[in-house]
Amino acid sequence: MKFVSALLALIVLASAGFSQTSAEPAQMSPDKWRADLKYLATQIERTHKNAYHTVTRDDLLNAVNSLDARLADLEDHQVVVEIMKIVAMIGDGHTGVRWGMIAQSGMFPVIFYVYEDGVFVQKAAQEYSKIVGGKVVKVGNIPINDVIEKMKPYMWRDNEMGVKSAVPWYLASPKILHAVGLSAAKDSAEFTILKDGLESKIEFKPTGKLDEIMNPPAAWLDARSSNVPVPAWQKEPRNNFRFEMLHDSRTFYIQFNQVQDKPDETVEAFFKRALDAAEKSPAERLVLDIRLNGGGNNYLNLPIIIGVIRSRLNVRGRFFVIIGRETFSAAQNTVNDLEKYTNAIFVGEPTGASPNHYGDARPIILPNSKLRIQASTLWWQDKDPRDTRKWTAPTVAADLSSDDYRNGRDPALEAILKFKPVPSMQEIIAKARSGGSVADLIANYKEFRSNPLHKYVDTATIMNRVGQFLLNERRPDEALTIFKVNAEDNPGSAIVYQSLGDVYDIKGDKVNALANYKKAVSIDPKLTASAEAIKRLSSQ
Image (cartoon, rainbow, N blue to C red; front, side):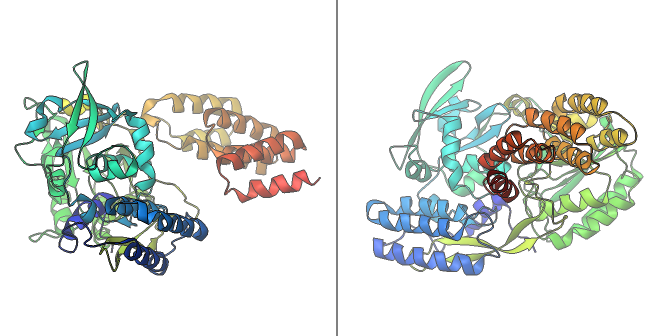
C-alpha cells in the first residue's frame, strides 16, 4: 500500500504526530541530541529499503558527525532543521522529518504558491489583507529565487516539482527560516511583497497553525476574485472523488483527489458509477483530474484502469489526464498504469513523484526528542528497470499563472478544449526511420521543441536514442549531427556529452572524445562509462 504524498507526509502525518510532540523537546542537551543522532544513523539504515541510493554512506555519516560537533552552539529548533537536511540527503519524497515539532510554535497565517510567474501570496489571514495576491520579492534581503535554492537541501522530494510543492510550507515556518539563515528572528520574518506596482515590507508573525495552512479558515482572504466562478478543480479539493458533466464543452470531468475509499463509497464503486454515467452522457471527451492527488492505497487502482480501458472515450484525443506537482505516491502508480494501458494524453505539470520510486514509509521516533522521522521501506518498480525518469511529464504543458488563479481560469482544462493533434516525437522519428532524411528529422524536431506546449517533453533523451540508433547502424556522421544538435539544445545534460564522446571515440578523434567525456563527468560525476573512457583514452 501507498499511504502518503509529499504534501500529506508534510502536513497530515505531521498533525497526527502533535500528541507525541506537543512542545519543543523538553530538557534536551547536546548529549541527548547526540544519542538521538546515533540512533537516527543506525535506524535509517535498518529501516529504509536502500538508504544509500542517492547519498553515500560516508557522506551521510559525515553530515551526522558535522552536526554532532555543532550541537553545543545550536538551539533545539536549529538541530531539528539540520536533521531535516540530513534525512533529505537520502533523496526520496517518502523519507523525511515530520513537521509536528517544528510547526508547534506557530506558522505564518499565509498560503504561498509557486506559480509560473513567481511566488505569490495566495491566501492569508485578515491582518495581511493588503498583500493578498502580491508577489514575494525577498525574504529579509535575499531574493526569493535564492531563498528557494537555500531551502532546497532541507526538502525531501523525488524531483523539482516536489520543491514547488514544499516551498509554501517552508516559507510559512519562522523556525525554518531562522535555522536556515533566512531570518534573524525565530518568531518572525520580514518579506518584501510587490503588489499593484509597489513594494512593501511586511513582518509576518506565527499566529497561524499547521492545520490552517492545510484548511484555511473561511475568514481568510483569497487572491482569486469573488466575482469569478470557482474552477472545477478547486471546488472540492478535500473530496476524495467526484464527477460532473461540463455541458458547454461536452466534457465529462472526474476529479480524483485521493486513492482512498470514502466511508460511504469505495473507489471501485465510484469509478463504475462515474464511467457508467460518462458512457450514457453526450460527452465528447473524458477528463480525469488527479493534479491534487497525493496518494493513498495503490491496490485500489485496478478497477479504474479496467473501467477506462472499456470506455468509449478511451481514444487518443478524447481521454485526458490532468497531472501536477501534487500527483504523488499511489497517484503516481495510477499515472503509470494509465500510461501503460490506456490512450491517455497527460496535461498540466510534471508529477511530483518518479515513475519508479521508493515508498511505504515507516516511522522512526528518536528516543529523547521524540522527533518523528519516516523512511521508505519498499521500492515500487511499475515501469521498465531502465526508466530513470524523475517524473511523468505532460504531453501538453499547462502551467498555472497568478493571473490564471486570480481570474478563475484553468489553463489545463483550457488546453484540453483547444487540443489539436500534432505528430509526437515518436511519430517524427518513425517517419525518419522509414526513409526520411536526418535533415528533415532535425527540422521536425526543432518545430516540435519550439512549441511551448511541449516544454516538459524530454526531447534530449529521445534524440539521444535516435543518435545511438544511428551509431549502432554504423552511421557515425549522421549520429554526430544528431548529438551536436542535442548538445546545443540541452547543454546541461550529461548523457548528450557522453554520447558525443562515444561518436568521436568511434571516429578516432581522441581530443574531442576526451573533451566531451570530461564535460559529461563534470555535469554528472556518477557517469562511470565516461569516467572509464577518460582513463582509457588518457593512457593511450
